[in-house]
Image (cartoon, rainbow, N blue to C red; front, side):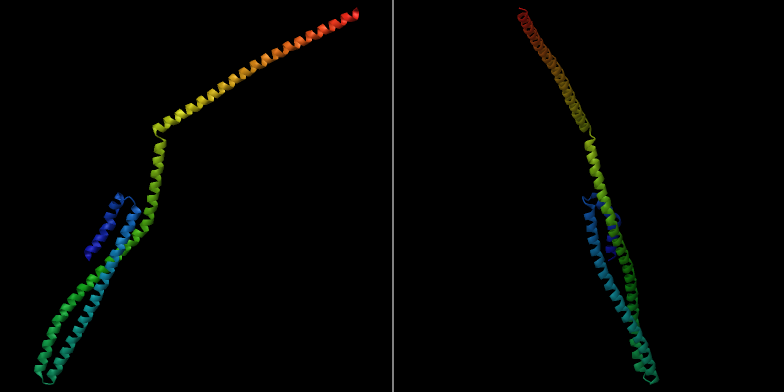
Length: 229
């Protein structure tokens, strides 16, 4: 029984941390430890109850033996007073036998009492450890989730901050700048082309206007000549 308490205490104080370090899911491992420890506590409660019952029974038998010793002594006294020494001897003989039994019962009772006291103390310690683990479970769960989140963020940052990503981003930036430069050049060429077309168009319009003007002048001149004649 004491080995059981020792084993549970060892798991709580040493094996727990090492196994959690190796476990893929610390929270599941803690749940498993809690289940195992709860089962051990139930076994310890049964063993403690059994020892306590044995302690009470031994005490009762011891007290009965002490009462019988007193009774046999009183009977021996009464036998002597009645002049029956033989009966007094038999009473005293039985008293001695019962005294030996009483001494053994007392010894067994004291041992059972000490064992029961130790087991109750150990059981209280186990229950205290169990409650402590339950309280720590919430903290471990929060810490595990926080650690996973930080690890994921750090992993993402590591990927995005890698040299390859930087070079790729730089290439894309240069490509966009090249697209912008090509667009500006195309716009400039289009603007120059439109200016030339406008000048040629204006020149063509001017030529036609001059032709119209000459034709009109000729027409007026003809009319003037006809009038003069």
